[in-house]
Length: 314
Image (cartoon, rainbow, N blue to C red; front, side):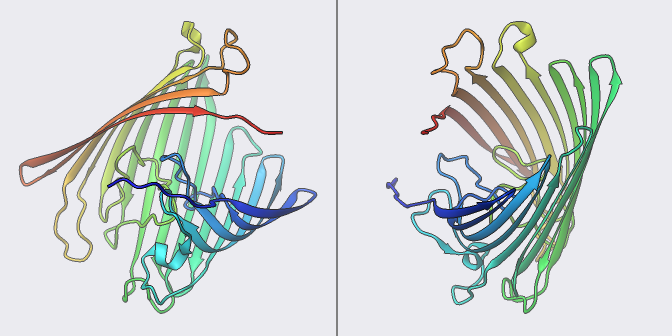
């Protein structure tokens, strides 16, 4: 049954010197593949030490992480255990990350984390934006993710490696954004996501589409209703279809997956709302995942109603 959980998720000290900050304790990390995955009201938080800094749109993160609390756990456990290692294995995570957003038309991001004798995972992305007409912009993005066993292969007992590559094209015209996505994952293994939400373009409400051998295409449409007299109201819909996935151990074919998502957001930011109401954000989401294999289709549906209100104590 459902039980309450209580835990001190964040408790840290920070020393700031100029643009650099040293943080020690339990704190949030939001660095590409290592992130809060804050979709159940309480986020993942991490225990260790981090040095962060940056200026004018460029930033870096250097972290030593030895424990993590999952969203609904009531204790911190070693990151090696979170990754799936045997209970006797205790290894820390070394995390390096960098972002460069100094130019509005060209952005970069990259990160890598390493657990000795267990796992190494690397992420990189780039996005380029350019005008293509009156009130119209085009944006082209690419991602590359690579993951493998490390050292003595104590995670699975044998070596493995895999990668995922993706491209995304956006057409932004006034309040409308139309997106097309193509992604592929190597047959060597499914892509592991032990430390947060998957950063791939096809990470959806229910499914990630990152199984071994999977080939995915997706279509997104987003609308901002402010030009139509409804400031704060926006909607996003998506369709994702993934096929050719296999069980990397046996080679057996896995289901063809299709997901249909819709998200409606309303933020009380319009000029007609009083200041106390403007931090309020309402979100409604619906998702349908169809898994088809051998002529049979299994259907999963989810509906989310979320209310967010942020109040800062000063």
